[in-house]
Length: 128
Ligand code: ZN
Image (cartoon, rainbow, N blue to C red; front, side, top):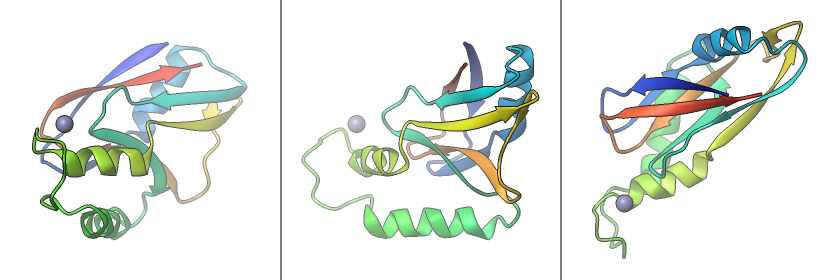
């Protein structure tokens, strides 16, 4: 397993970590199979989606804001309930096929770290 450090820049931030995951796959010498990208946080997640047009992730951020507004009478008193909701909507892991040592993603797919309560220093675990 390998830990990738991630530094997010704002409360909501989508970081394209595709190349970092590929580098970890190479370092771990994963040649064939599936790699799991796991986020060990409760107010951040991970997803795969289009990384060609940045408007896609910006639209996703807006849609998540509509689904889980920052203030909405939540019971969780820490003040970041919306971030917990969004993290669960995105999920805490993605699994990606690996062929001949390369991530087997679709043409337009990238892997995004999804921050919902930043900026913070975070981690991503790459698990063979
Ligand atoms: Zn909380």
